Length: 128
Image (tube, rainbow, N blue to C red; front, side):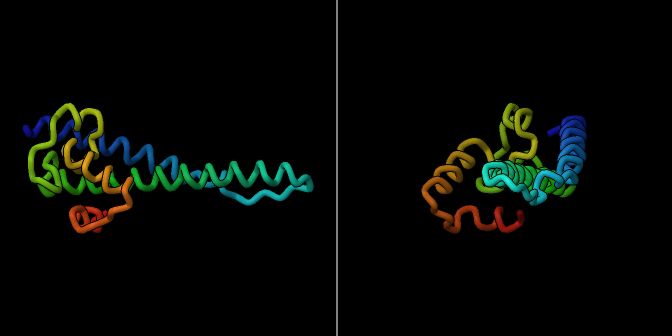
């Protein structure tokens, strides 16, 4: 990967990091709201649960972006954390924080769906 490409990805990652940090600062949606009406309380609880899931997803994404920036700094960006092969530039263009090549990502997704959290990706996930 050329220095210009690396700088381009670093700028994209920095922008995404700033965007996510801004979104994560807004936590008003998870405040517990009381209401005299039971139906309103159920609605508030459902909205709060959705907001919590969104915050969780966004914080996980922020963690992935920060790890990608760390890989940019240490020179390992663009290399799959599992197989050490180069990650396809089209994949990086679509998901700049991708830690794995497409085949390793598919394997990780299958293992996650099966509930198999074996040793194959433990090292990479431990860093997260």
